[in-house]
Length: 385
Image (cartoon, rainbow, N blue to C red; front, top):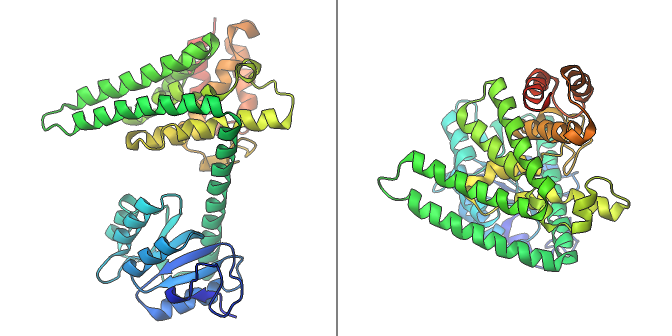
């Protein structure tokens, strides 16, 4: 039986029109050509997810309003009345958590760029597509959606278990959002200079870092040293100034999520005794990203914060990313974070030889081997005696 259904066949009860229960998760395919939609239905008919289709962007938006179990959107770019990029932009505004993909012709580069920049598409496929590649890409997107939903569930659970601290976090977020609203208004002024904007952003970050330091003196020291290390690694790698500034800001804020930890757990660090403690501790990177989720200017910084405990060999958390799936900024902060803890003055004298030996052991495990020289240079310059 074909797993694809038209717009009118999706019922609020989650049943298909023939009374048979539909899969718990469906993907939305949008294309103005019925034969293309038929091909997609056939391609996905044996998958664990269902398929719902729409012949226009407007119809697709209607489906999104009426459905609560869509886990991925696959849209054509060239459609009358509303392009795929315009449709994805509207879909992203209403459902930012749903992964979005675009299909374009081989030569339609401008449309592809528009879909990525305006509609937030994280992947694009060319027409005609290869079945195997499209299947794998969609499967990866559905897994990405499941992972996002699971992270949201865990974040909610942690918040419920720490209600008092969560309330404190909410108040702090409101203060930060108020500062951000003020910043945005200033940025909209006709004659606002870029240097002024940078100074304000830096002030927000430094103020927030100071608030983190109030929780724990060692945490304050750790954040500032990690920021110096991350900046020197970035400089040694020859990264451009804007990216260096983002990485340094993220380094100063990478432990934001620890504000929600209890004093007992914060003092223990990674010396944890139970699976519950481990889960609560590991949630801090996701919570740190969540603190900046509503601030447009901090989206990339939030991404670095989320992934600063990922490891190059896939053994890290929260998403178990592998190799160069991990953003470069997050890898740099991870290396700086580990190095500051490993070579802290309480762990004995720091010599160039000891730095080289220990960091070589982390190359290919914690961070990309191509970073080894830059990390060794930064750590030796900053921490060695």
